[in-house]
Image 1 (tube, one colour):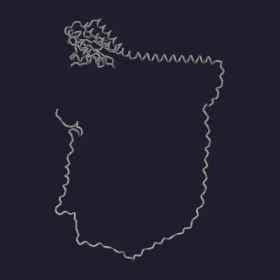
Image 2 (cartoon, rainbow, N blue to C red):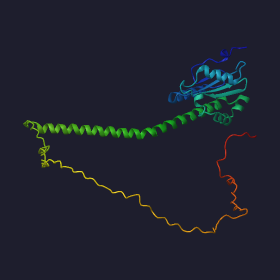
Image 3 (cartoon, rainbow, N blue to C red):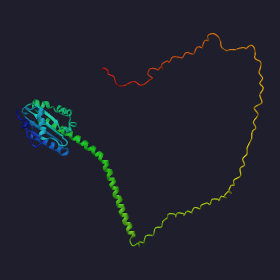
Image 4 (cartoon, rainbow, N blue to C red):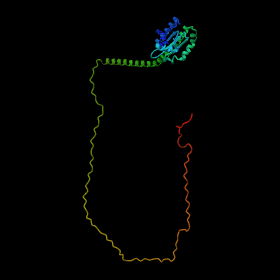
Length: 304
């Protein structure tokens, strides 16, 4: 087994590393120039690497180790792109950094390799220069369009703010200049003028009226009543005469009747008591269905 680190091609510090020797000098120069321009403007790195074999590694694993080993893209933005071509294995792999997966998506890369017929290029080993250069150009143009659109949106948002700040600063400068000129004019007018002492300040507050002292009203004097003299009390007695109890009273009695009629309201024989009104049995309160309480909405077990 070969160490995967030793199988990765060394970084030459450029944007095109043609280890397989399939590209022309002009193509390598064009790719390097375009890659440097994209990195200088937007910080992204689009690198082309060609090798003859991956030395036992899969093309995808080789591309991942190459991408991470070289540290493609900005470390904060993670916006690198690798275009790997393996000539003897007739394979290729294009991968992007995590920071631009939503920009240079897999679907976009699939369309690019389909449009420039990368499968035919590696299968038949022809037209490497044109197709690799076109793919590199297409990816760089896509990144450039994205970063320019972000820059334009930022400028559109900041332009009104800049105008407002400029207007505020301009107004402040004009006001300061006006105050300075006005102060200079006032100082010239005051030159040679005798300065009089400041007049004493006279309070303009109205004086408070003094309230007259309250006069206590004299209460009318009361004439003392003459002392009461005790009158002599003469008791008197009342005498009642008792009637004499010795005189007897005469009583007159009516003759006693010989026959006595006895009237009785009692009726002989059984007396039938009136029938009492039967009490009605207590009947339960009828309730219409659904009028009482609410329906339970929870609990219970059911089958799905």
